[in-house]
Structure formats: C-alpha cells, structure tokens
Amino acid sequence: MAWIVSDGIVMASAEVASDRRSRNKGLLGRDHLEGALVVEHCRWIHTFGMRFPLDVAYLDADGAVVKTIRMKRHRLGAPVWTARSVIEAEAGAFARWGLHVGLVIELRE
Image 1 (cartoon, one colour):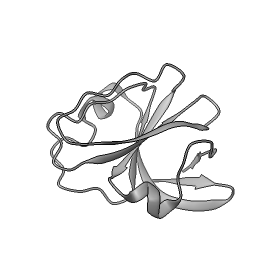
Image 2 (cartoon, rainbow, N blue to C red):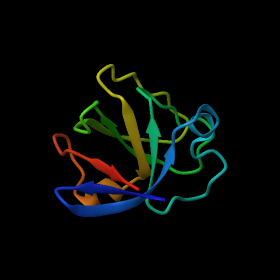
Image 3 (tube, helix red, strand yellow):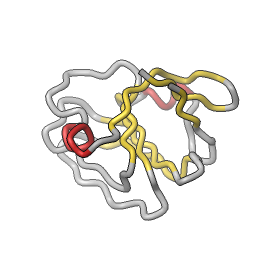
Image 4 (cartoon, rainbow, N blue to C red):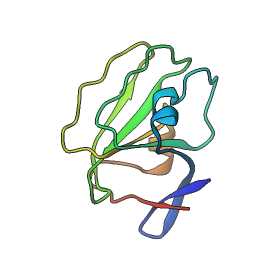
C-alpha cells in the first residue's frame, strides 16, 4: 500500500502497478476502486472492459501533473508523451481530492 501525497497532505491510498503483469491487468474485473491505482512507466491507457468511468492524471518524471481527463468506459486514450506514470481513480475522485494540473505528486510507501 502506498499513499498519494502533495505538499505534505495525504490525498488518497494507492496500489502501485510497477511490473508488466500488474500494469497489463490494471483495473480489469473490478467493480469499484477505493483510493487509486498508480501505473508506473505508462504514457497512455484505455478503458476497454472497465466497469466504471475513470479520472486519469498523467505525471511527468518529476511527479508534476501534466494532464487530467475523465474517461468513460470502453475508450482509448491518446498518449501523453511527457508522462512517466498515470494515476487512475473512480470518476469524481480528483475533484474530492483537489488533484489538478500543475500539482506535484509524491508517492510514499
């Protein structure tokens, strides 16, 4: 279990998908998500087979949020070439957490 932190404030708990198997599986087969999933070494995602819409944040190598989007189910996202990792959460989570473009995110374990 890890924590998504910005400016010393814990925003959410997170699972980390760091190996090929966990990155490929992502959120497939889940009905909901408590907290977030952080997908490392990732520049784009899809929501084919998802059971719920997602909030998606793309982070650069320094952890800065460079783009956020809300993705409906069964969609293919465009690559974000400056991204090095992605945060996925249930739609509406980012508004509750205050996560937005420009924020610097730290992942603490």
